[in-house]
Image (cartoon, rainbow, N blue to C red; front, side):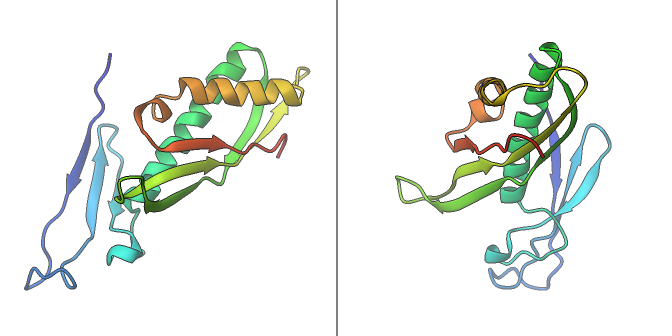
Length: 152
């Protein structure tokens, strides 16, 4: 098994600490040395200078599906030239009446190269297997749907 770490750092930058005025800007840093600005979603008084947790969540689901898909395709000897996704997460009240990302819809577009290309049924199976084995999808209650286009 493995551990995965993230450092989240925030400091107050306002005179007061009132809901309407305190800063939401903070920083996400990772073991790789990559760090980037983060903030709250605009609906929760964030700004446009960083990634909000909701966007990060959707990106994590999408990236996990993609990386799992690429691994499965490589093992099946399909050559993937490009993979693009315009993932969408929906924040709404869940069954308990609490705000949650209740579903994420992936819209992967995969371009294959080489001599061997999957037919539509094989492509659907590749996405199904990627979903079944994606660590992030297996870690959350959010419904994750794949609405895959056959080829970019």
